[in-house]
Length: 197
Image (tube, rainbow, N blue to C red; front, side):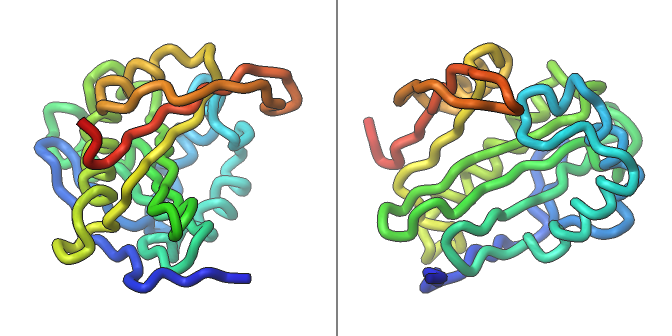
């Protein structure tokens, strides 16, 4: 049964940060997406496989209406676009940031992100994820999602992602065994409790 949100998640676009713009995807994003969807280094710890251009095009088509969340289980999926040409060509899509409506009853969501390898270690993923968390934790009356808890799950070998989550103020909430891309792994869950001291 589909559980609908009383107030859909519909951020005011574009979401701007000092160096980035977050916005829904368009078909014109395909070339930039292929650059990192096809990179084994980028997708190593992401559920996606290494994708061909055609596989990326199909994936992009499924994301075109993900600028709004109306029901539990849906993902808000936004392109991470450079606005500051000191970091690279302005307008380039360098990644994606995601927020899944995990539970309406618990006010819980799951954070995700992917970034082109050429833009790692510049604080850009932190900047994009911070903006998404700001939307997620802002009260509904202020145009946010009004979430009470945001989690992120990762392979324990992904130390860079764990450090990013800790910089975002998330703390380790649990761990467990899982199968990821056919391989047994230890999954770590980080959480941000909204309003927690």
